Image (cartoon, rainbow, N blue to C red; front, top):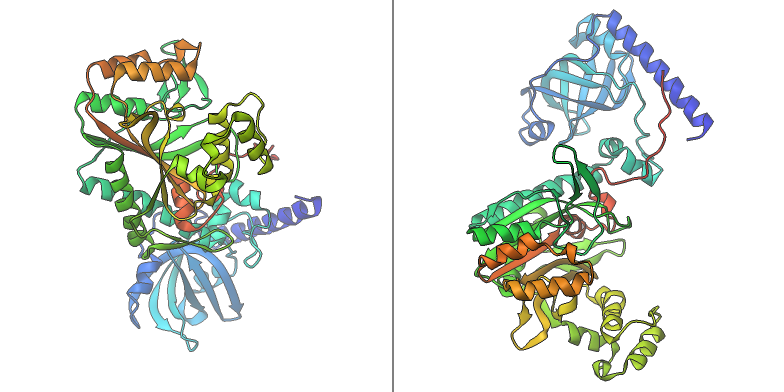
Length: 488
């Protein structure tokens, strides 16, 4: 903020404090008490001429015209016009209204009527002062010009931007409907530790902390998977968890270090039972929250269609479609040359498998726009899944991809403790202390055949609300801390 802008802010603030003092002199309590009211959305839905109402909200506009004024209040559910007239109020209430500012909170009592312009309005017979805004809200038509400021001061974004508020209302509805869908199918919601002795369930860099009472190092979880599988061992058969994961990694348009996930596990299930959940859950969310099965996504307004069934394609076939039918017959040198010709940077030490996966990550995945299950993935990339019955080099999984981004993996889970130990060992190399021995012990007590999936909720909300930026669907995304100037 420039010095000139800061001076303007200070001047507005000083004037608002003057107005507050004048209201106090008139006998108004600066920050009011609870006010029994009807939500403005309900007032609008139940509108009847001459009906008596009590409502409350933040002043968003004020048009003063001598002995009468029109204003708009908002309570987060709707905006509603109010009408102030001198001969309808006591002298103190009419005089006090002169010192109200945009952003102040008031409660009103009065009757409903419709203006000549056809606007439903509350004719105010009494009002109460509920809270003073010392700082000026953003300008109505320009709002917050700095995009980062919208994230740092989300309260201003929500105050001035109905689209943003609607997006977070949809996020809440999506979470509620996920729970409704799974509960209706016999799943129960559980909670597992977010602070763990050992990171597991994914390959990611954790956040570290220290448990003072136990005098031991701990990590914030990178995934709940291994604890949820312990519950399957213990006898729970259909479980899910909605919660936070933490990964000490980069921040970009689709990644935030703190993010929300859904993980689902079903005993006696497999990849196909998880596929059935996805093909049931996504249409359910679309119909319940959006009222339709299609979404306009991103700046290009790409139409995503969530009508099942969804396309299914094997990993190798998807790569062949991009790189040619002979791709897996090429030598490492030929594959490297062909990948580099497509603009990829290939490490000279990579083998054919790693080159192929770079091709999939950088070229193939982004072409999968409509909902697609990519199946039969090389086992090296999914150490917690069971091998395909016809090919031990592949695992029985899917990666569910929409708009070029992975939304959800689904597995036939590994329940063989010896095979699981070998997969962990292959993954960690010489760092054998990273193998979760307690989890292996749990598997040795016996785990039934199980299907599991994990879905990134932030990315799901991005898909269903049409935004390509993860910060738009997280109320308070991680941001670099700025020094806040002190105010006397």
